[in-house]
Image 1 (spheres, rainbow, N blue to C red):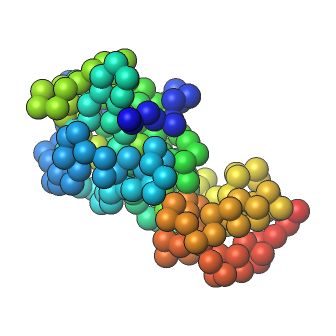
Image 2 (image 1 turned 120 degrees about the vertical axis):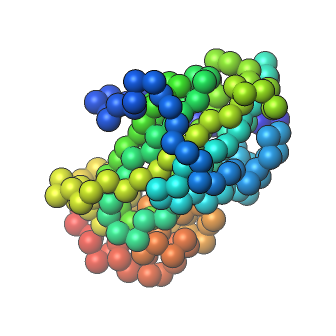
Image 3 (image 1 turned 60 degrees about the horizontal axis):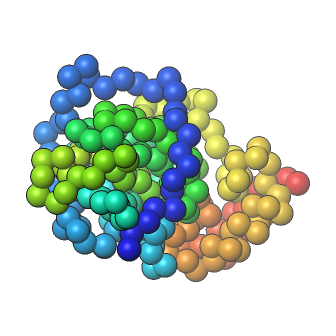
Length: 213
């Protein structure tokens, strides 16, 4: 049974608009998970399986749902330095769309043609997609959607504090606890501060170097 843990999404605002006709870009890649499969359900499975997504390459994917279940897709990307990213989605069905940091929503939106963006420290993140208030069936045109992830131009305002995992504006014991909670996991999020997709002593050293309780 596939039941998303990401249900309470806040609606983002003042994001760059899609073209008025909501025409998706030409596809450059295809989701590896087959419709009906469970190979990139991320936070909805204990093993947190995800699928990589490349910057600047439009990815064509599928989802499905019925009265008791719904597919959730998690597409993983890695940042080696602080960056502002924008993810865009095109669908004929209403969808939930978010950027996720270790199963915590960073930014989210709802729509058929929609965007989310965030200023993120180095780390491992996911773009989350799931159908909302509809039951697209595998094989139907309504089960297909397109996602595009892009890096935005250098933005002086995008200066996330290294080690500030909870984004409170300071590096303290809460951030240390969050890092230790993710130690050695396959879903490190921004606890992986050097972008090597694991949380270890190097990340701990970087956090302690920025310590300012």
